[in-house]
Image 1 (tube, rainbow, N blue to C red):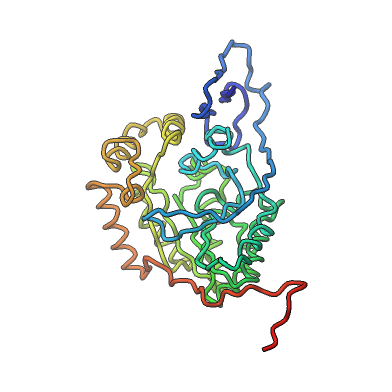
Image 2 (cartoon, helix red, strand yellow):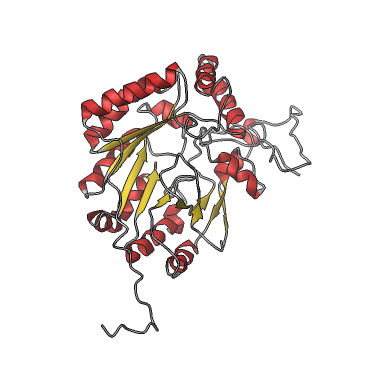
Length: 360
């Protein structure tokens, strides 16, 4: 049975989602009914809980034609950052959990991931290619401070001289500069930092537990000062809400040291559409209809079109205008579209206790 949690049952302090929509695989559901007796001040605050998972493998493969990588690692399932627009929310349903508040509060950690990764890299059949981390949920979300799974993964990758691409909104990546800087010097790492808006109020509403925009710009500066190549990811661009900031975000990121830039328009797969629309009606009621009108214009009249090739850039006149603005601004600033390819020729399986030493 799926319990529907909403703002009438708990205090949603620091949360973006307002409800817990039913898990689409469940046949039986329940719904809260307000009997008029609940008082907001008496309701408990919704807290984060973390469960432990021991996976058999940690390297996931994909064959998507519009992704630049074929493998990735997710240290965590769910994300406490709680971005209302997160396209990864529907993945929580596969765990029997809701893409709504459960995604932000019922998290799964994989503390054995570094050890399992090392076993996979030692497989004689393994062939190196860039591993992407942070493409589903953020590896530097708040619980990383306690679990340090991402740091352990980086230590393994550094030991094998294995290339890695990281995407994050978290300033905690600065903790790992001691690992990332030497890897960057070898051409083994690049980082994408996502900035959606420069407005603190909008950021706090959309991405309640993410470092504020100025803090993320500071992270770009600290990474680039350490020699780590950084791409700013203006992602997602929310029409009629953040699209007017496009040039400002690119300029501020360039001034902070970013050498590359990319842009992805808002996409609302499965349950994300309803969650986003509920949030939008509550946070920005004056422009909700306009935002969704533009979103549907981007996706062929639908809330979302999963078609490869257009799902991340959209279609139509508005999408074309965004692309033109990005091209003009990046050309003016000297930002490149792509960072240099990472090296795979340095990959080497390090010796371990009990290995026979080579005679040559």
